[in-house]
Image (cartoon, rainbow, N blue to C red; front, side):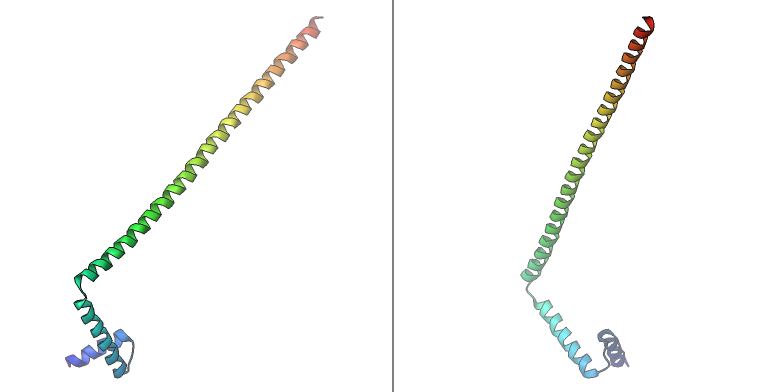
Length: 115
């Protein structure tokens, strides 16, 4: 009846067919549950605070890592902007030099033609 159903449930839960093993595990679990019930509230609070601190520390670490990554990213993008600016500068310098050179050649050509 009811006791048998409970035993079947426990047997599945503990994954063991031996009634002695099931009884022993149940005894351990029952003792643990009683101990946890009688555990002073202060200990539960301390446990909760410890868990909270652990979570806070992990969050802080995550924030620091994120900040560090953002700093690296900002530095890299700043560098990229500088590199692009230099590239533009050199491109313009090159074009200016080429057009001055062209103007000089045309002047020389005109001078030689005129003579």
